Amino acid sequence: MLVFKFGGASVKDAGGIINLASVVKKYTGNQLLIVVSAMGKTTNALESLTRAYVDQSDNMHLIYEGIKQYHFDILHELFEPKHSVFDEIANTFVEIDWMIEDEPQDDYDFIYDQLVSIGELVSTRIISAYLNKEDLKNQWLDVRGYIHTDNTYREGVVQWDKTCESITRDIPALLDKGIVVTQGFLGGTSENFTTTLGREGSDYTASIFAACLNAQSVTTWKDVPGILNADPKFFTDTVKFDELSYSEAIEMTYYGASVIHPKTIKPLQNAHIPLLVKPFTDPSAPGTVIKEDGVNTFVKPVIILKQNQVLLSVSSKDYSFVTEDHLSDIFGLFAQNQVKVNVMQTSALSFSVCFDFYEERFEKLLNSLQQNFKVKYNTGLTLITIRHHAENALKELTQGKTVLLEQVSRNTAQVVVK
Ligand SMILES: Nc1ncnc2c1ncn2[C@@H]1O[C@H](COP(=O)(O)OP(=O)(O)O)[C@@H](O)[C@H]1O
Ligand SMILES: N[C@@H](CC(=O)OP(=O)(O)O)C(=O)O
Image 1 (tube, rainbow, N blue to C red):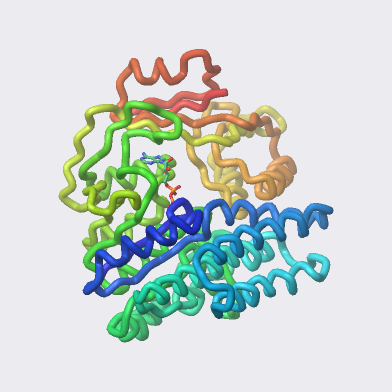
Image 2 (cartoon, rainbow, N blue to C red):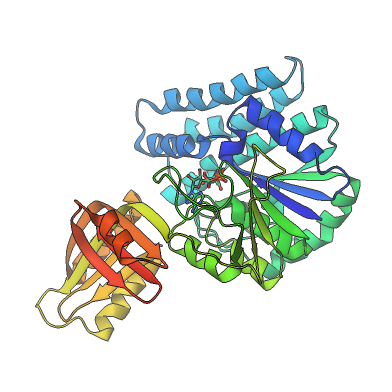
């Protein structure tokens, strides 16, 4: 069986959904499980809605109406007005109506997951209905009964044994009957609350299903020809990798190559399942194949940009050395506040660390660190990682910029710049 993952860019409008159906049609005869993300930039819009709801902002209803309008406009392009999908989508949105009618009481991350998850619930209902209309018989599956997580909202930790047990119990029989369409990015807790797996986590969902079902392969359909040596949104003259080893792909995604979610590859490597990254505009193109014996050919260095970074330095209030005890306390606070470290450096008197900026998490972290330490920070920075680097690449990329931190090892150079 095959697992396909279609991300937001591939289903951003009616044309994208029609294209998805034409890609799926080419694979008629295969058992197919399709994981889909929210359409276009819906997750960003739902994040804004969550913020507006928690802050009780005046623009909350405007944001919400925009999200509904976007989906209903697409529905009108794909279906006759009397199609049952209109009611299904309206009913799914009613969940938001219920949530935002009362003043917020719960924790921000909990509210976030209950609201933001609507994006995937709506997109998969639309796509499932459209595939059925096109005679691509499929079953819509609520993933929250299959991907079981703990209750770490916004970063649900997958309970693998329970998840694989549920998946292997039900999904093979469903696949015998036809295509299965389900949501990426979402999970469910034992108390039946919705969790999300971390931004851009739908690739990871595809890999969980593939690993549990021992799939032949996973294909993620993207708006790029495959994995390139750098993000084409920022660099011209990029080159595509025809193949990559699991290890190299893990390193690239770990450092922030946003084309694949970093948690995706390890489960596939463990189960020896290849990951294909292919363009949804040209399904017969070879894309990039990530596999154990993938040959890494570096014609150009790999460049990874991570924007919206914070560089924070911590020193003890009395100017004594930063000792192992301090570091252990500092890391404890990072873990508690779900802050993932991208680069770190220690000196005698301070510990510097670079990480992604998420406003709510950052405020909490800062408050707890400031109780025992002196803290300085800079926001709005970029972390540049160059793998298989050449000296001139590093120079070119940092030209005209202020370098705040630099770390160079045999294969990898990292700089934090302003
Ligand atoms: N090394 C890279 N190779 C290809 N694309 C990359 C790379 N690094 C970043 N990207 C970006 O990843 C995007 C595709 O991934 P993503 O937006 O997550 O897709 P989707 O959400 O549709 O699954 C591309 O549009 C590109 O801008
Ligand atoms: N919709 C979620 C999950 C996801 O993976 O999306 P995409 O496949 O479009 O990156 C997000 O935007 O974070």
